[in-house]
Length: 62
Image 1 (cartoon, rainbow, N blue to C red):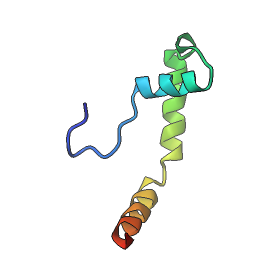
Image 2: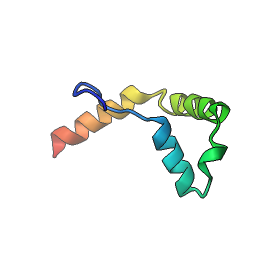
Image 3: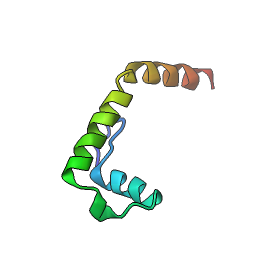
Image 4: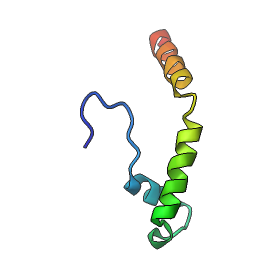
């Protein structure tokens, strides 16, 4: 479980749940696949600070 200072956590279980939603069995999610997913998520979150800033702006407007 994440501490109260953690904003976002993505676990192996989350990846497996996504795979199941896609019709992919858990057994297909090997350590190599997880490593590739991790790289993809890191690349996708490269501009995470922009996302956080926009979320702050949206929250302050509501």
